[in-house]
Length: 64
Image (cartoon, rainbow, N blue to C red; front, side, top):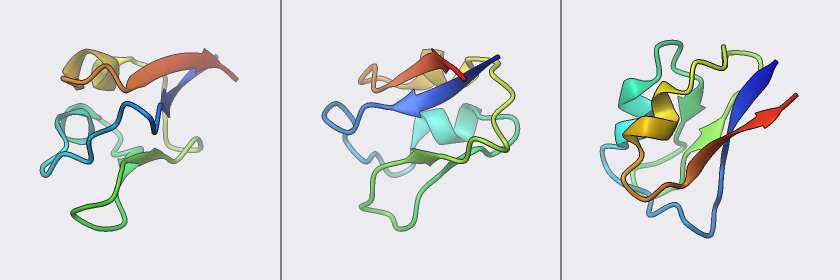
């Protein structure tokens, strides 16, 4: 199974975060408007919608 991961060197902490908006299960979360997105692995279903939605290519899929 694959899950999303955020590359913090590439994440621009968008507000609103397009990858978070695209996430069907809301597995991408942000603690504050200026914070980078993080992935809650237990909620990620591995669809990859967030990967395509991130304009900075900061989200990718990894094997779990």
